[in-house]
Amino acid sequence: MLAEITYDDLLNRVKELEEEASRRRKAEKKNEILEMQLRQAQKMEAIGMLAGGIAHDFNNILASIIGYAELSIEDVSEDSMVGANLKQILAAGKRARDLIRQILNFSRQSKRECGPVNLNPIVNEVSKMLRAILPSSIEIRTEICDTDLTVVSEPSQMYQILINLGSNAAQAMADGEGLLEISLSERTLDEDAELKDPDMMPGQYAFIEVRDNGPGIRPDIIDQIFEPYFTTKDETKGTGLGLAVVKGIVKSDGGCISVYSQPGEGASFHIYLPMVETEDDSEEAGQAAALPSGTGKVLFVDDEPIIVHMQKHILERLGYTVEAECSSRNALGKFRDCPEDFDAIVTDMTMPGMTGDQLAKEVKQIRPDIPVILCTGFSEKISKEEALEFGIDDYLLKPVEKATLAKTLDRVLKKTKNPTGPARKIN
Image 1 (tube, rainbow, N blue to C red):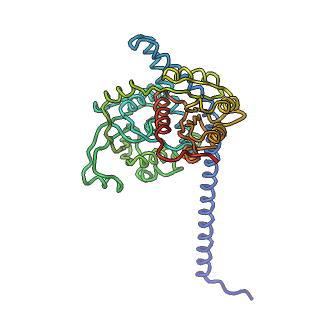
Image 2: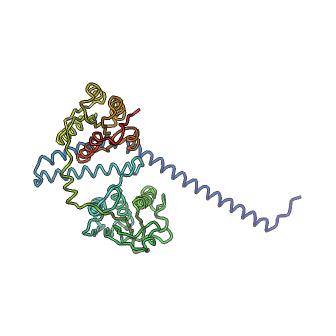
Image 3: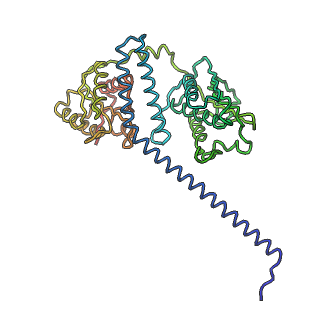
């Protein structure tokens, strides 16, 4: 005989089924999010592999462009049209170098190398870049204070922040029409600074505002826009990572970012970055003009003939005698024949037959006190920390500018002549 089923039993069963269905939907949603994150991680891994693959070759090309531009600028009148053109080539080469580093940073294959960054020229240049890539129907207004505002960051990541916010604002404007405003000013935050962000301290801040007159951000989602993978765009137009990356950069630089918006009245992003004091420009210019010259014999090794030719000229102009080689094995042979003839070695990392770190190991076994500078366009095999730990005297990322090479060589040679401890030996 069947048990009697009451109305309450049916009601409880329905509730159980609804709860089970709800749990299933939540589990399915969670799985969808995990699958999306996995796809994104795989995509980032592929981007990282591609970035690493092209970075070495591309930085070798940039090394030649920057190096020969620097050499040529020294040979022409500073006020001539040729000199002005060469300076533009040099500036473009440095921009390309920074973009490569930005790609490596974004793909998590390069550590951030922060330093003083003047925001004024960056904001000005970003507005020009946005003018080139956004529809002409979008008006762009830029307001930059007269005082140079310097923060501690990376130039490439400041570009990334501003281009991302500007592009987002343009995409939000209906029919590709509207007004985009970018401003840079100085703000003083008092003891109430923590009201903007719990980690903020009183002091002087560079204040960046990116404003648009688009439809604005809905109140129900405005608190979510900085979350990873959150996006209101079609999946073919966005990953939901842009604003999360922007916030991550700002926070890592000790600043804060916030957004203000009302439906139909556009959106305004506010960024506060702590300012730092810098040396007087005239003093920096004087230091740049007076690069340390050197004496002694340098063994320069790189498998790219064009770089060997260019760097040989640069080193000779700095006062060094140079023995240049395109083969690491040939370079090792020359060093073995006359190890006391050389005062320093500058070598590329990625070379056929014998890599730069292997060459360093061999020469250090012959003569532990020989200074070795390792240069690389990109290397997964060895980081700067690892190189210094096992005996490399310095580690430079290509393209290496003349000033950087001059100062680095001067430093390692002085350290060798006045050692603070026993010479290190690579085992």
